[in-house]
Image 1 (cartoon, rainbow, N blue to C red):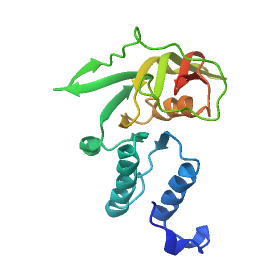
Image 2: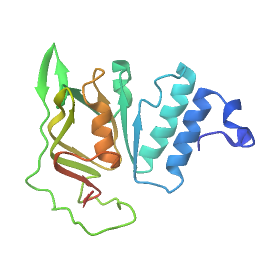
Image 3: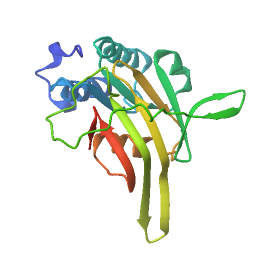
Image 4: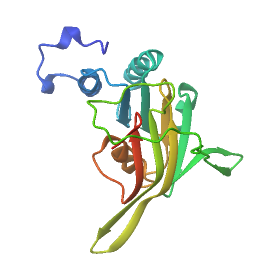
Length: 197
């Protein structure tokens, strides 16, 4: 799928940056996950290689998978099913005519997540792929406290290609770290495939 069969014998030092990025995607796809999270996967790539990455993601979405991707590039908006903006740790659905409109995420009709352990989330039409409820992340260090995420409510469904857009330091990577379990929220709930992680 990532079109690297002819380079399989090469050492990592002998492949390009774009090929390394495709290897990373291949590693992520080995277990056939229903959800793929990518932090700036096309950031340092040329236009042609970035287009190949987007084609791979488009094929995955066509198979019903969800791809969530951080990007700084506002010009890529047309490629995504949904574009979510993050500004100063808060989500915004869109910016129109310089006016910011706050994201709305319905929560009243969602099934409650289970804490039952599973190997991986199972796609289901009656539950979202991702659901965040009031997620706050505060970091503490010698300089004091810094809140990177400020009460994030977000619902994403299977079969979507979602971009998370925002300036450096706005909380994009922190948000992805909540989704992957690399980091944990200070408060709030992160549910993947209906499972509270």
